[in-house]
Structures are given as C-alpha cells and as structure tokens.
Length: 126
Image 1 (cartoon, rainbow, N blue to C red):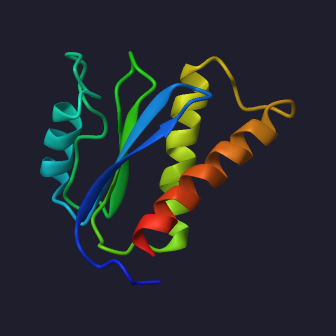
Image 2 (image 1 turned 90 degrees about the vertical axis):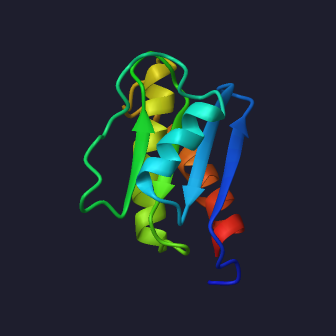
C-alpha cells in the first residue's frame, strides 16, 4: 500500500451495466462535486446526496435519476475497509438503478461488481 500518494481523479467504466463511476482521491469534498458535474456525470438538476461534508472521510455522490455515481475519498490512500464500504454503496446504487435488487438470486452479481470496484480503486491507490 501507499505507492501512489498524490491526489487523483479517475473514471471506471463498466460495459455490462454501461455505467461510469468517477473516483476522487485526496480532493476536497466540494472539488469532487465540481469534478463530477464537469465530467458529465451529474448534469441533472437533482440535488447531489449526501451534502454534509463536515466529518466525512469518504462518500458516494449519486443522483436519483441516473445510475452513474462518484466515490470520494478524503485520504490519499484510503484503507481497504473504507474502499469496500463505499464500493458497496456504489454497487447498490448502480445495480439497484439497473433493476437488480439485492436478494439470494442476485448476490453473485452484487459480489462481482463490488469486487471489481474495489480491485480497480486498489490498483490505482494502493
């Protein structure tokens, strides 16, 4: 862990669900929101949730009308626990928006998508 210690922003694209996930690492919360809008992932007028940045270490920005989202981490090298936690929120948003609710029959899809997000973030920040 710790080989890439600079702030960064990158996009993950999944062709199966045709979704972009913007990832912002070691940026200010407000800057991540701006980057998300400028990347074309937050173009609607919907309020970005959550909107309380006072004590946050990480969060997922999402809008109710679109499956794309933004995962933001305050730390330059977030730990596996925080990455997995936020990846789960992103997974629930993307797959739920795509019509796949979490149940016994969909657990594998959720698990694979979650693992993909964690691996892709890990490859870029650890």
